Length: 415
Image (tube, rainbow, N blue to C red; front, top):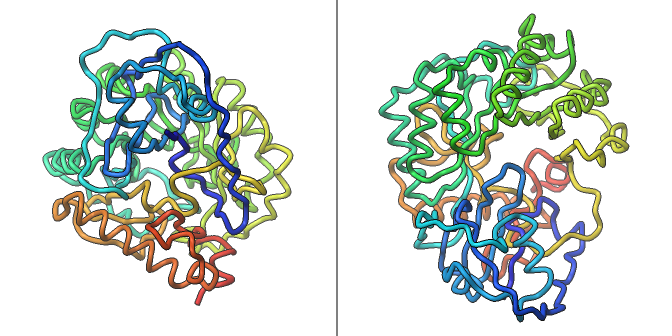
């Protein structure tokens, strides 16, 4: 019986997969399934989505999924690594939390995403120089009934985690209805915002956020005038600070995400200082060569310039891993089989960052056809890369999605 990470962004041809530690647990102790997690059962096992932001989704094999369904079970005979993965990500707990409302999804097929970006508006108050889908921001805002129907579709596809995004999601007057619908269907959500209106959300929206993960994600690409310049919005940084103070006072957890390029790399230590002040984490990621970043010909930088900061306890590193050994996972490399994006018209993008490739409207899919098209997209990407085309790791089903399509490792060996 095995529990492992769902996805590891490194690829096995660069980093060696560490052997699963086989040391068995000898204990008479019983554990309980945490009722706040979301469990999606599928033919090959189950995917478990934690109830806290930045804990890792876990894949368990079929045998362990049968044990988990009992809700109370012994850990004797499980490997130590399996038990550690389940405890670390708060999937199992020692105390019986009485509940009749376990959140379970039953999927007909494997290879379905668990995470969706739901774009609820194409209106935005900023003009960001790194916006990966700037061309889509045409001001269109789908009617509420259409957004709610898409949330129903996501539930039917086995999605458990929704990123509410835009444009600027907080520009919608009916944003609370969208949040409440997501929670009503048993999915977790978080909002991504540029922070302009964060300090002005009403008490109903505050309550809706706290009834889910209790999280907002704020884009912070600099401090002071740098943030205002990168985001094309004078006074934005001051409004962000007001917003961070507001959510802190209302017991909502802010997380920061920062897109780094040559024009703001010097701000990295200052951004970390903001994260420390608000006792949170900042996720650093590189600007991708798409949308506004491509249009503005943004200059890249050597990630080694900031490596000394990436091990800080307040930093989540989303740059390519330099690890030479990685833990066993269900999937490796590209996140296509874990995460999708749904635009304001309802079309699905297998890669949220690549706006040149979309598939059908979400309402046209069922679980099996969505899985089919996502697997086909992965296979197409793998076939265009010299190394991936010859790799045997996917001989018995997709295990590795290959290099990120925006990475040098992909571009340098593209067929």
